[in-house]
Image (cartoon, rainbow, N blue to C red; front, top):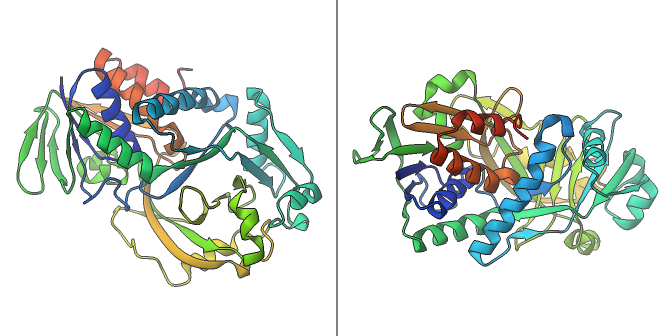
Length: 367
């Protein structure tokens, strides 16, 4: 089949990769001037991958498939873009997300090491032992290098005959005709169209606004105090419980140290809205990390990066079929780690027409 994929984030790139492997003819359209597009949800330097999902969510089983898909991708790219430095989870409050993550590790039978605050701070001196309940460490996780993955996939697709276009913003899609109209007025037709446009999907299909909500988020890049830099250079990625529900990626893959908090998001009806950092925003994100990070105000903010995400109400992945179009959103902030497996599943559904099965899988109901 001739298939158009709209959007070159991780879902679109992985779908195109899987479709090419299945023997289809693929055209990939990206609105940004480059792949990766730095404004896209998967366009930043790195993202966390880890095992810690509750079995009851279904994603606890799907994460194993995700790891398998990444291994398949590394084999094709000839390069591994996962830094397997492990992860720390730090619990601040009873019943917080880290408590949930720990139960997920237990249910999955994944080994991890429990640490009391004093033992954790001795191993990782940037932690303040007075600021948290406990920590645990697992070797089964780390950082995915997003920009290297995107660039590698784009090169691989071109080398396998895919038509990869940047600066090609889609203005409208005729789902029944299988026709895509670009902002330039040019039109393209295909047997099937996969739309993986992230937060921009509502500009093409506003009727999905009841299912998908757009938020503007931001992360802060920082430099730690000089005497702690060596500890951060070798530190695992970190997830922190409490009200901020925050995460941290140390220096890896040539990128800086990133701090993000899941409470730091603002609803918006426009993915392009207010993408410039707000004065003091980086410091506000940074300050959410005390506790458990000691001396947090000594961490110098070097950059603030904004992003637009789509979320579903229950934070499960989403698909919608209309005519010849399949809209896919591996959304809600935790989708990147599943990106390679989402692409494989979408390509399979295009091939066998089992869209209902794909929807169940995306919602982690078919495991």
